[in-house]
Amino acid sequence: MRKPPYYYLKNISRRWHTEIKKVDGKVIILSPYLTSKTAEGILRDSKFSECEIYTIFSVHNFISGASSLKTLKCLYDKGCKLYHLPRLHAKIIISPGRFATIGSQNLTRNGVKNKEASVITFDVKEVNKIEELLNQWIPQRKCITSEMIQHLEDKIINLRKKFNLINRELKKEINDLQDEIWQDEEERIEIERLNKEAEEKRLREEQRLQELKRVQEEKRKQEEQRKLEAKRVQEEQNRKVVNTIRDTLQQLTPHGQIKKELAEEFIRTCAYWDQFPRGDIVNAPKYAKHIKNYRDNWIVYTGNSFSISYAIYNCQQVLLEFLQEIESGKVMSRSQLLEKLELIVKTAVIKSNGDKFINYYNENWGNFLWFGNQGICISDFVNLILTKGGIDDRLFGLIE
Image (tube, rainbow, N blue to C red; front, side):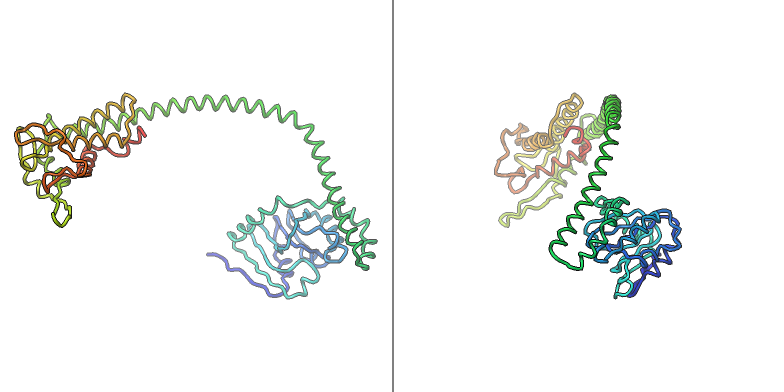
């Protein structure tokens, strides 16, 4: 069950002190401004192992009294890690995995007196979420060092006197000092970094090249082995799929014969009737009762007839040839296969004397092969032969 948060519309510094006293791990504090009694008070009697404090290291703030340099030095001496976080305005205290507070109150003297609003949560999920969001700011932080504090401390007394005059010259001097401190600090850090990296760079590069060569060689061997194994597995899977489909297709015409039940199924699915003059084309499954055998050939309709046996058998042969081509490495797309099967259906017409009718299909008929107002839906026939033969996406996945 999730723990509800607690809301404060008053000074929360005592609650901070109470909760931080219980922490034996890490504490993270974000407060743009820090002054002595408040900031030092909440950390009194604390037992934490690590404390990170994020604030704004601004010469103007220290000279104006918005923040206390003495407090900053005290926190530094206490072992707290101090960071400058540009444009910080959030006031947050968090102990990872334990509690977090978010509000308007700074760790300052005025923060105790002002009308402030804060919320504290002990819900671990919420605390972790807040910490995760805070981590997005971490790359922007800069360390506040003892050199920086000392640098400002040496000059702050005289600047405070001048600050009372509040003129443009003083503001410029403050800003120049601010830039000077950070510039000196950045130069010092950069020199230390360059000195350290210069010694390590050659060894790192040498190790990197050796490791890169080893990894590349290992990857090459693994990739070759993976390709060989994948090829073997794929070929075996392909053989199984093709053999399964071939067996299914061959069962359509046992001993070269097409059963009446199969012929009837195709007519129930594919036969249609044009309700002229209404123009409605509807499925006519009852025509399956009117199929007849003519010279060992199942046909439907009179006069020019649709040869069910011819269409099924020849579609079956095209599909068997298609499987054989797949095994030999040839590729035929789905659209090419469908075009061949549709052509067989379009030409499965015999005359009354039993001869095959040449060029019976009319392009104006589109998806139907008409015999008067009775007809066969070409796509339905093709889809059914594919279904009965077990031709599905598994097979096309081998070649497309």
